[in-house]
Length: 298
Image (tube, rainbow, N blue to C red; front, side, top):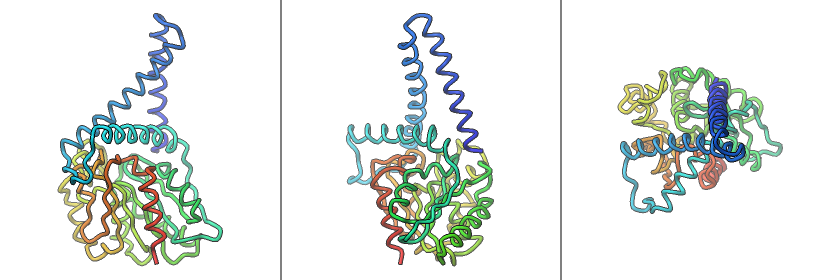
């Protein structure tokens, strides 16, 4: 479903570019008109990214001194997040097909990758490539339907966990969840227990909610709102399991606000700075840290 929605959005962008091209071509050369039409579409996408940063800054938490950015750092943050969003939504997620990679002579614990809100397994294209290079078995799951309750995804995660255990021969798996995917992992733990999981690594997960969730649609978006009763119940449930968790996040996340919502008490918390929400899925420092966490599992 997500791929279809993204395909529709891509078609709308192409049609818009075509219309601009047609209009501009009446007053300028065709090649110049085409370039200008494409630039306009790219600028609209850039404005959307900029607005997310604006909202996150308004609702956000101040970064500590060691993670404050100068003008160049803020520009790099914005451009990296913009390019990550364009690449992920306009290419990786459109082309994604679910698959399981079982490494020959594998290293480490096999990994289930769980995407976030409004995404699919294509979000993990970069981490999947690194895991394959490191000979770490892994698979993705596409959470459907897109606007369901987070609890409803637990059955899909359970099927994926058991399929990965069976294919890899491993007793336990690790889970890496981005954004809502981390909450999905926690909901799965609440329903199925921790006997089959060795570590849960969350990236930019709003463990205590995000102010931007009020702009989303669906039951899952409502469950990610600040001070949501569902999140409070989840918090009360898994306090004794926090030793399983590693929470990796950025003080400059442009979707999770306040950014400190990613801090999970009792877990191993690893904050970064200068990285946006979507960029967490492809930033080299984040990917290297995730792989290191996986390989550190006894």
